[in-house]
Length: 226
Image 1 (cartoon, rainbow, N blue to C red):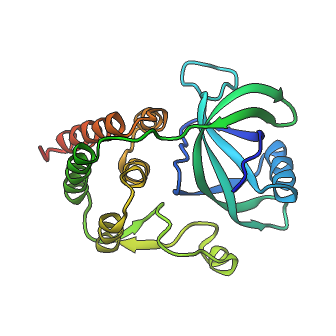
Image 2 (image 1 turned 180 degrees about the vertical axis):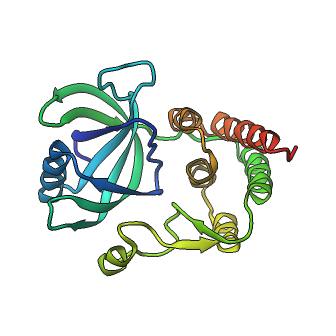
């Protein structure tokens, strides 16, 4: 898929869009309604960037997630529910426009090759921690476990379907890409938005998995499951 050199930017206080993950969004602000219309009329892509936590004015983090609009349902009041699927990490550079919505130049951030044996050991540890973190019952998964049609999205109010923990674990164990495992687990299980942003900004795989393990272990310890 060819990526555009410049894209609209949606700045949100705590949202992180990882590659392959599904992000349900409710579009109600006039500027983002216009952004959505323009995106649907062109390449169906925009980026989701976290607001820098120490800034009062709108200031998107430089590393963001580029997403493709999978489903968009427009309501009679002009608002929309949509499902955005992450495509890749990007670095936002030059600001092309600030109003009515932000547009930045960008370039994709590719993950460099990593040593296979070390990465496999880290992935095994991640999956072990995931099994300890999850409990039985429905799991509102950001994983693209199945196709979501427009009809299904209307029934779900723009939200992805729920899956059991067993299904989620089976899905993760069947993935061949350690990179996808790291990103989807970060998206699904890290409750702290700054931790998710830290994972998003870590392009190299070995340190990315190391950070994820550290965050998961700290989360388990916080809940008394060391």
